[in-house]
Amino acid sequence: MNILDKLKTRWGIENTFQVIIILVVFACTGFAVLYVKELVFEWLGVTSEFPFWQRAIIWIVTILPAYNILLYIFGTLFGQREFFTLFLKKSLGRLIPGGNKSSSTTNP
Image 1: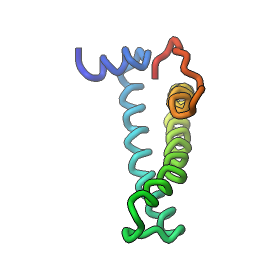
Image 2: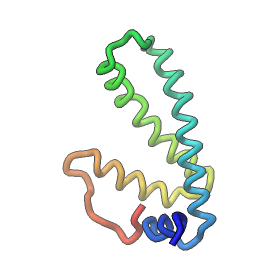
Image 3: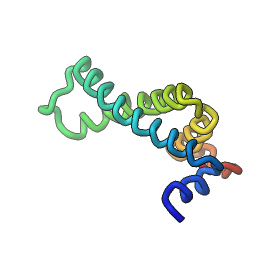
């Protein structure tokens, strides 16, 4: 069983092409968030002289939500809105205490 078959099984997807599109969405989002981070940090005046803990807090508060928004936007643009809606619900449910921890039939 190759990696694409494992991802199809894990995510409940039947089409290998859909797995490839989803991986492309993750890649595009990752590159886009790098640019967003630079813009946000520049706009806020965050430099490398800031203590690490301050940069980490700023990153969590600004970039983590931006990543999720970009993931949803790219997922929609690539025709995978349903998958990423479920994926984000499950991911955000893990981050929020008392969030939705129930399993669904599809397992993004």
